[in-house]
Length: 400
Image 1: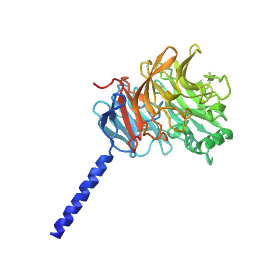
Image 2: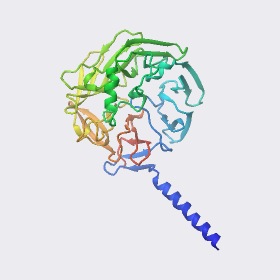
Image 3: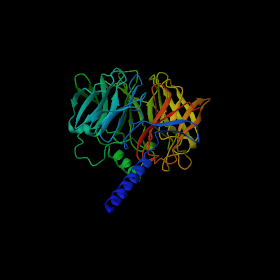
Image 4: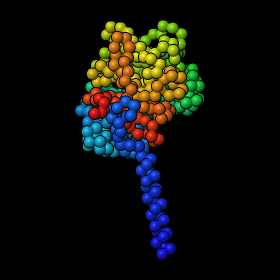
């Protein structure tokens, strides 16, 4: 009898433990009470994260989304929500090809490509040790080149990897990071840009400088046009630049007009004709989403209210809508910025706003990094609003 009582007590403990674990799992989907929009959880395992906001994670067909997990890389089928492991082990500098359905990444000093449907993997190139300290990857429009930046002769430097090697440069960086950014910028370490030929593995370097080079991106339409930034304290750098892959055509995209003006978190429009960026004139006071037309040099500015400013903005596949991920208590718009996933519609020089998802319980030490799905119907983001990091998507059209 006592043995049965002990077994019964143990069974109760197991059931309680199971229910407790189940209660901690974030919901699979819900209707956001404050907005009426449907939100779904795409990821299955805690610790799953979407890519940085300008790193393409989608196949051209829009059927698969690549995410980082604790075990490596996985692909989420956006129609069935099935999750398939693609790459085992830690992978860095991840970007997905829009044409060839390959994911490109670095591991153990080498560059790899893995086909998403077959998992066939090929080693493209081997880096020397100095290539480990910099930013990457960018993938060009015809998927013949990868690109990034690196610190030349960087072995033994005491600085951590540049911001984009982690989640990305954050205006709401934790205490101590601001001082690190100042020290790293002032160090003026020698850097250069590089390209990797995907077919042959040939590595070429160009644009040698002592500016801190970061956030390298390729034009989505011009295979030879690269955008990059001069990293550092935003009010001290002319941040946004473009250059050709042969090292010619260096061009500054934005020149500040006043003291403490900042511009950053730049990204291309889907047609490659405009570079969009967060503009503040001056920092923390007046907010804009700005765009520079590459062909004409014309500056486009949409006014953004403090409460709607976002750590990152992004643009829909048709270029007609924008998304934002709000900001935290240490962001440049605090106090007063909102903690929401936003949908923006440009109109008469300003952004009309619609709130989609309440992120008041999100810890902004993790950047949500909003992206539109290729069909333009959903916005994908990562969040810890339920505790562990997961990948979510919110539908733009309201439920019902």
